[in-house]
Image 1 (cartoon, one colour):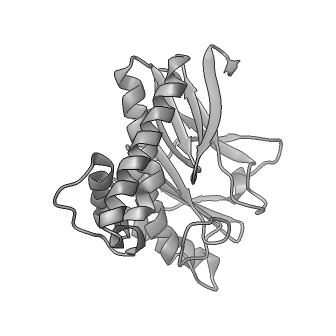
Image 2 (cartoon, helix red, strand yellow):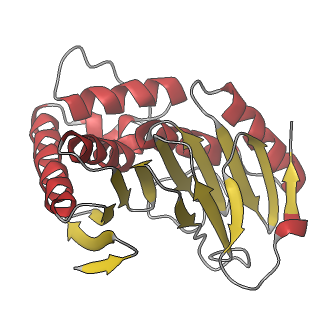
Length: 247
């Protein structure tokens, strides 16, 4: 286990879940791993008897089910997408919740690029968007918690998307909500005019309840709106001139 500046960091994979955990307690890693494992099992058992839950591209009403299923359905309804659009984020949120219950003051779970974080110190995260020029050149300094950060791509993600954005990053209080919203916004970013497509995406993001902020990269143009964390450089490349904040 690697320890950096009094924090523990470790990664693991469980089927489709590829996770990185950061915590101030060594036990945080096993707590998060067990949480994700058990919640995946609950979701898989639910899908055995409700197969449409995994394939639906529209929100589904769930009168009663495991917490992970109820949260996925809730966020999907708010963003008007299928429930599986929020699965990675919800798994991360539930793991962070379990870490907090066990006394972790720093609980950060990254699940396939979706991040749920609670911390008493600032946390820096980078943004990866495939092979576009801005990818891995900047990130965000998270200081207000809890926070959820999710990124969807119409070009580089394995997840289903109907859009063409290089990256849509959404900030919410929960990763599950951010995950669903990022999918919804990414779906509408598609146009021959990059600036127009970004504005359409911004408008969509602002229409979704609980979205705090959004950043969209499309053909190396960047638009932001709302409350996004401080942007920080990851390498020497200067990207600030490419940013446009849209009210």
